[in-house]
Length: 367
Image (tube, rainbow, N blue to C red; front, side, top):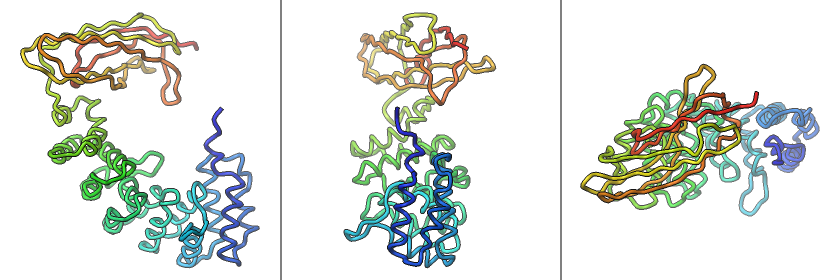
């Protein structure tokens, strides 16, 4: 069994933080910090543990934030010096987000120094929320930083819908202010940074699909293979939704002359089993056609309606008169993000985002 995520912050991490703070600030009250940070730690989940350690820092670091920031900066690895890294820095990032709002530039500078040793993508968001223009001016200057972790922070920390983090309502409503950051990083030499740019664009596409489709079209001309991969990843939600302009960006037109024969290996299935799909696609048009084949499983909900989940399958270029035959096994198994309900379900084949064939099955779920 995998180790619980909460154990990433354990009493040993508290002791490590205490050791480092004591080493750089001899007057630091190690005993009080350890007592506050470690109190009943085993009973708490990951973020509760981090917030408890953050609160212990608030109680024991100097009330002057510039003094506290200097102490924390001295705790980081530098010039061959060992220091705090990894999950020990999560509560420190959260500390800066709470105590540093009155020292804007100093706080962002500290978070920038922290991010190569863990990440500060959660910490910088409160500064963006408080003063978006001021924060983005500073963060925007990081796109040319020599450290790729800092460059990634510029894109990841400004994602409107960053998972596990506070959302940025102003950027959800209007993402235009972060487009210059994403544009500056679109050809970054590090895949780690480019993936972050793609994920941010995909976030934006959930609220502004036409904006992202237009952004992709604008940056497709003369794109390197790496940029094309980024733009394709950025368009994944739009492609699953069948967005016409997004399909057009990658050379997929509305399907024409397509005959699809689709079948399931059974009409009834129990939760935990797998369905096997068989699909034959025949191309009857007179010119070759590029097609993308996906499928959507329409899961039954508690109220009897269904909700589709789109899955990627394959793509091909069909010559006139050509037929392709493909097969797919799809497991219907318990997962933490979905509750299954018994009854009628449906599988729909999508060709270039449009429904081409479908089949029904009954799902049995043990109560």
